[in-house]
Amino acid sequence: MEISRNSKRREMEDKIFNLPSDVLNCILDHLPVRDAARTSILSREWRYIWANHPNLVLEPKNMFGDLANFTSRDFIDIVDGILFQHIGPILTFKVNLPDLPDVDFTQVPYVDRWILYLSRNGLRKLTLDNSSYFLYVLPSHIFLCQGLTHLVLSKCIFKPPCGTTRSFHSLKNLSLNLVVINPKVSASIFSASRLEYLNLTECIGIDHLNFDGCVESLLHLVLKKNNEVKLSCFMNCKSITRAYLAKKGESFDPNERIDFTCLFEHWSQISKLTLNGQQLKFLAADSVTSALPVEVNNLRDLRLFGINFTDLDQISCILCLLHSSPRLNNLVILVKVPWTADKDPALQYLQEHIRISEHINSLQTLKIKYFEGSRSQMLFVKLILACCPSLERITFVHNRVEAWNLSNILKELLLFPRVSKAQIVF
Image (cartoon, helix red, strand yellow):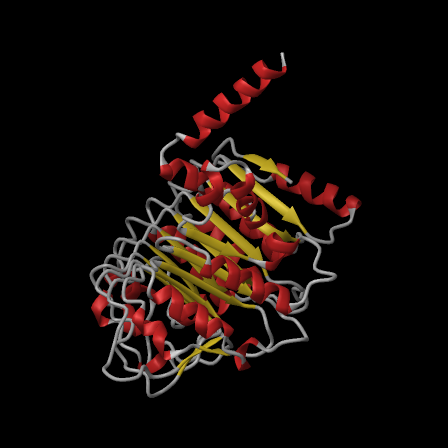
C-alpha cells in the first residue's frame, strides 16, 4: 500500500514537472517569493526551476511576512543570494527598497550592484519602488539596460550617463513617480518610438525632456501634479485613447492655453478620460458654452475627482462635456469634501439648465462618491434623470450622512421626474 501511494505521488510530480516551462514559470509567478524558492527542495528535478525563473519580484513583506525582526542586512543578503545563484536570463525584476532605520540604500552600493548584474542578463522589465525617505541616485550603468521595455521608478534621481549619450529606445511602458531628472541628462533619453504608456507623477526636471519620438505610438498618458510638464508637449500624440490629467494647485500657466476644443481636436481617439477639478477648470478656459464646437465621438468613460458642486465653472463644464460626447456611457464623479453651503453659485445655473436642457442620449451609468445630498448635488441628479433616456443606474456612495437625512434624500430622489427606468442604488 505504501509503495502504491509513493508511486502515485511520483507520477503526480512527474506530470507537474513535465509541464511546459512557461506554465511552470506562471505557477511560480503566482507564489510569494518564499514559497517559490522553497520549490527547489521538492525533488532533484525541481532544484533548478526556481534558479532558472526569469521573473523575480522581491518585496520584504512577501519574503519575510512579519517585519518585526527584519533588518536590511537580511534583505540585502537574500537578494544577493537570489541574484548570484540565478541561472539564465532575468527578464523581469521588481524590488521594493524598504524604509529601515539601519541602512540608507542611497548611500550604499548594493542596489547599484544589482542593476549592473541585471544589465548583463537580458533585463526587459525593471520596477524599483523606493519606500525609504531618501531619493536613490540611479547608477549610470542603468543605461546599459538597452533591452528595457518596461521601466517603473519611484523616488529616484537620474544622473547623466558616462560616455556617449544613450536612450531607452525599446521602452513601451514608462512610469516615473517622484523622480528627479538631472538637468545634464540628455533630453532624448526617453524619446522611444515604441512608447505606449507614459506616467509622470510629481516629477522634477521633466520640462526639458523630449517626447517627440513617441507621438505615433503613445496610447495611454498619465500626468499627475507635475508643475513643469506642459500638456501642449503631447498634443501631437494623436493615438492617445486613455488619459489621466490631474493639475496641481490653482495657478494656470498663461503661456499654455490648451482648452477642451484643442484637446479633443488633437486627441480624437480618446475613449477614457480622467480629470481632477483643477484640470477641468484649466481646460474649460473660462469660456464653456452648452456644447463644444467639436464632437467627442469616441469618449466612452469620463471620471472626475475633486469636484466641487458649488463651483459654477466645474458644473457647467461637466454638462458641456455630456452634451458634446454623443457616445459617453459611464460617468463617475468623486465629490470634494467638505462642501460649503453658504456660497453656491451653481444652484441658479442648474435650476435654469433643467428647464432648457436637451436630451443626453448615451449616458447609461452615473456614480457619485462622497455624496452628501447638497442642493447642488440634488439638482444635478435631477437634471440627469430628466435628460438621459438611456440611463440604467445611478449609484451613490454617501459620506457622513445621517440615517434620517438619507431617508429624506432617497424620498426626494424617487419623486424626481425621469425619462428612463434608471435604478437608484445607495
